[in-house]
Length: 517
Image 1 (tube, rainbow, N blue to C red):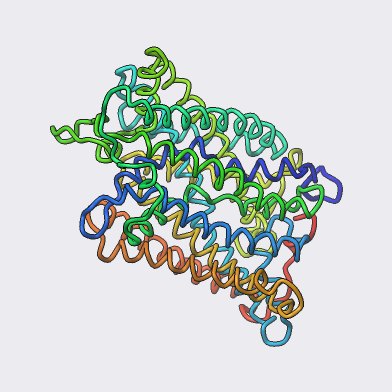
Image 2: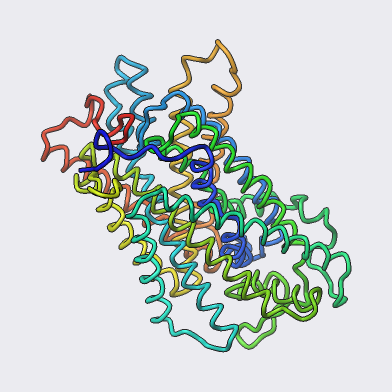
């Protein structure tokens, strides 16, 4: 089915390529713009805003991400033959390596983690599609052109199709695109964050800043608010694990484990913490929006704006750069649009590869496990995921609540996938405990598992006792996630009966070899 040697995916990615593709998913240039509105609009169960806890919430999510990244890196080093399977492969291999009765649960373990990971991998691209449509509508609104909601939905569908066409042609071209995008967005981010701090220091408009001191930006004042902000902030950081789905295309297995950690250090630890510090330093009561006939300020204004970071860029350009606010806004928004393209492309490339591994094991329709004869890409999977992304994106642009709902669904999938992967790491590495690095082999996966379960429970808590649109979005996301799990159980049983396969005691599948084919 593939023109590459041996019928598998081509090994074209060096360490830079693996890291860049993971970095494209984390994309700080895109996510500061596209999630700030959702973060600013979040409220606690008592109805109070949690926006002042953005930076601590991000830091908390970053700790969770590093714990999980360490587990992924250790699993990637232990199982360099993972191909495109990532956690799907790790789950099976961990149980088989335990031997005895544990090996009998290899199939059900890998199926569970593969199926549930689709809540993340197949919803996340749709979230990006919705954000792109919203961004384009914002850019037009700057020039006093308001796009009808049907036009925005059409943009979402068209954007999904465009990215799908790029993804079908292969990951090498995608890597080159992502290198350029990452360099441009990092330069932009550093520049904007520096301008934020200059504005704070000079206060050219004599405004009152929402965060009274720079210290107050980073010091958590309410742990519950930090936790609630973390349930959204995880969206900013997911993607580091995508490197483990590129093993079949990495020139050397070590590039995968290194790429997992490097992508999170560069984009998460350095860029995100710096840019959020700058944005929180700038937010002030002079920033206003009109909502429901009333003028709102600060975080409340950011919550009702479709592009609060664009508003910030315009203000900085007008006050610090000689009145070029509109020009700066357009430049920044175009760079963000490029970053969203790179992120959506990386989403498609990663999400479809886990599905491809499941298709080769006949755990999902086998067409999803086929490669394109010319490009050696899982083209059927790409087009199906493109269609799903178009639907999710069109749904997301209808309202902020819809966008928050699909964001919560993606984040629920993330917490489940990351939690289960940490548990798999604990099982897989248990035989190494007592030899070397006990902390890494035991404590880190355990803490990562508990942290992800804790965050998952936080989303459920928001759904049960939360307030306003946040509560409605959480409930809708929880309901959809439960429905997806039920569908997965039904499909596993029916597919197993049709293929005369046992759910317990199934041997190693064919979709997890070193070539990923």
